[in-house]
Length: 168
Image (tube, rainbow, N blue to C red; front, side, top):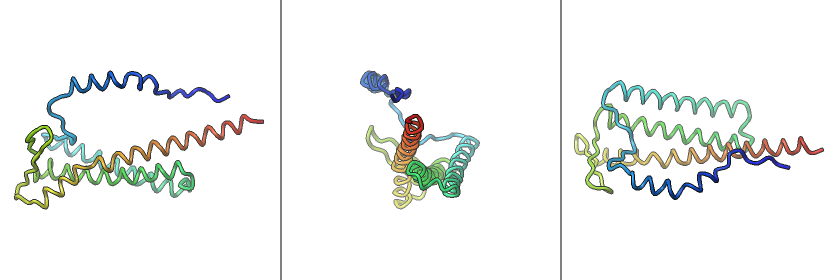
């Protein structure tokens, strides 16, 4: 008989409507997707963190390939996830560089659903490039989903091996 899943999220789903309503009521007025740093040491430390994460994902890809783990679906999905995390980190480093390090771009909130991107030299090309950089969730969300699916696949494979091991 299979064991009960210890990672049951039914309790979360039960309280999800109440948490959603509470979140909407307590929603702050100003919400920014990209964290801004006022002093140079903050952004430098933040950028080093992105670079460390980026190089860690590169090392993970080479480790998975080098050990031949990419033949398993779960590890292959984790490898794809690492690739998307690399792209996300490159994107985040570039966005932070433009808005925090060289201050070439500034965001002005016009209304709840509108912003204005102001560049130092009024370059519409830089404004569009920065806008595309701010869509970093299009890289981060697939990376997290691939990581989740890869880990889930590895757990399922492990469970199947345990069932086969326990079956005479």
